[in-house]
Image 1 (cartoon, rainbow, N blue to C red):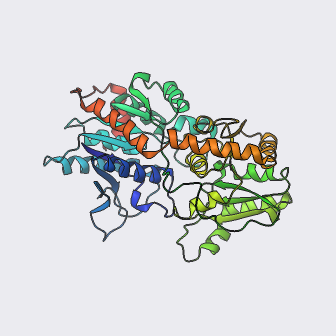
Image 2: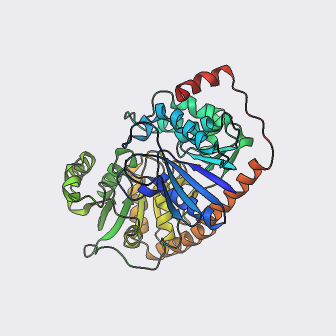
Image 3: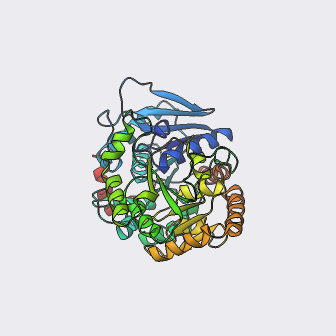
Length: 423
């Protein structure tokens, strides 16, 4: 099967670089897993730099192609809406010679709009994975000018009604989609996967913890919504433990240490730790490479996750694959991937007292931690491998390519919503 992964905002070639996210990991790993199943996969990304090749082989059966759309420079993902019409038309032009894919799987709402534009004249099945919804983000996250205002929510609703299938990553996301008016019959749940060959319980452990201290690890972008401040608040009530934060500047930056010192969120967290009297038990490492990350997980006694909202939550699963139990807020997809009192402990969101109590209890009970660690490994290997994700999606692709679907009829309101993309 010829599969097009439309990922204008997250190139798998940029994985591990500055500004990369779970979407980059998802697209890179999924494309590789689909290639191993024997499919011909092309990942279409927006060209951000000049001079490089138009196409790059990522893995056996997988090619990444750069598509010109807008200025050839990095642009924030949620500032790319005006470029998606050009991106979609460029895809249609590439496929006009007869090399069109059997199915398009778009990742993120903007790429979904580009996929609809690309198939407007020559109808092909379109599948979309949102990787987060504006309606949920508006409800859970503070306004920060990061794309949650404007037309996004309406366009996501239109996209959900026009796509042949919507792939949700959790029941929580299905409920959110239902509130938006996306039909349940057109939605399937296929969770993201974990590279269980990389994230394993056996292997080297990073760094040396301070003598006598247990290690609480947290991993994520160095932004307020990840809840690192809540972990510092909780650390006051968890004696005998250090908190290590992985996230921040590009690990390849020649002045990484200086960049970390300049980072406004890092400075805010260090000041908060100083006010709470735990600055000597907080370490901010900065971002690390994908190859280094498993060793950091293995160095921890527990992984802590305290985001205000998390549509899926990959880091808890990576930690679980390494045999590390999780203490987390019961939000979004984390509430489903972490089984309370089996692979970790879930506590009410924003309740730092309960968070601290859960951390104290787990760090103080070696037998319980070992039991959780074993169950965590089993859960990831039975439910969250990329091979399973790819196989589940393969069935979705076959279901939409097996029937001749008529092009959807745009209602007047839908045409209004899409006009901003096509212009």
